[in-house]
Amino acid sequence: MSPAIAGAHGFRVNNAGHLEIGGVDALALARDFGTPLHVLDEERLRANCREYRDTLAEAYGPNARAIFASKACCTIATCQIAHQEGLGVDVASGGELHTALRAGVPARDLYFHGNNKTLDEVEYGLRTGVGRCVVDNEHEFDLLETVTARLDTTADILLRLTPGIEPHTHQAIRTGGVDSKFGFGMLDGAAYRAVVRASRMPRVRLRGLHAHIGSQVCDLEPFRMSAAALVDFAARIRDELDVTVEELNLGGGLGIRYVPADEPPRIADFVRALAGVVTARLGAHRLSHPRLFLEPGRSIVGSAGVTLYTVGAVKSIPGVRTYVSVDGGMFENPRPALYGAQYEAVAAARAADAATDTVAVAGRCCESGDVLIWEARLPPVRSGDLLAVFGTGAYTYSMASNYNRFPRPAVVLAGHGRGRCVVERETYDDLLRKDVSL
View (tube, rainbow, N blue to C red):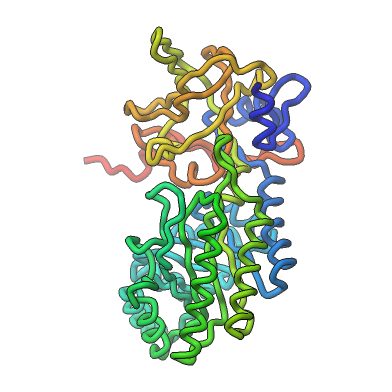
């Protein structure tokens, strides 16, 4: 039954049988803002922020903080909400940095990531006073030496380390293994050498260590292993190099429920597990407690998102498949095409009807692989129906493109019974704004 799907994702079906998001009828959202439409449930988003914030304080103490990994959905509004709820903001490019600053997030609360920051980006970060630069490689050390000398300033840094841990997730979103473009390897000695170099740089202050093992990870054990490895490494550099780790950033990566096979831990259980490992290993090594950070992205914004689509063509191939084409697709959600991401959907106006048909929900790009859901369970669907796809808050709008010259959709924040547009829908003229005629 469709209501079971909606309920499993935490959304209500109202008395009219319609899906509600943030207390707003999905049909009203589609009417007022058009489709395709990315909708974020504001209270769900804020509640996820608070669960990280409050559980960290309870499990580790006041010397801990959650940092929103804005790459999951980087808009002015999402950065503002994270800041309002007491989180820092992780940015991974000059554009994300610019967005967070425009959102009013103080620069000191920003953590600047990126495996290939440009000279201009490093300078932008240091000029604006970002709280931490997360150094990813030797090249970035060279850039920091150049820019800190030019600006006559210092840089507070974390070192991004790769602990050699391979979580069970798609290869495209594993980031902590030996074969990774990210970070200084712990197993080959690169991390140790990076600590030595950072300690000798006069304009760099090494504040701590960072590791991020991957994304959409639903097993706690790889997180525990990574946390333990970082604390053990902190003990080693204290004993051998007399370097004190003041800050320990364990990254993010906690998965969410997309389909019934996904069984992610609760946010609170994830936080308690990591805080417990860190506390135990610190005690074993007689290390003082560093400031502890987590960097969730998907698990903050992912489950808060629903995308609304209008059905167009319906093509039935007897004995093969029925294709239900919608007005979105890989231009506004490339995840299924990129790495086989799976979703669940309901017919928003008939969310109380039995799901009797299995269909493919196809996008409108000129690619055979542009299928959002290959086997969606839905009631009989007709042209003009409204479909709602769950779990689209993370890595959809932020990865959207203008492929086939489709305008990117609007983003709406739904809460307390009303919808507010936080990103306007692009127009055809927007697509041409940077074109230059011959």
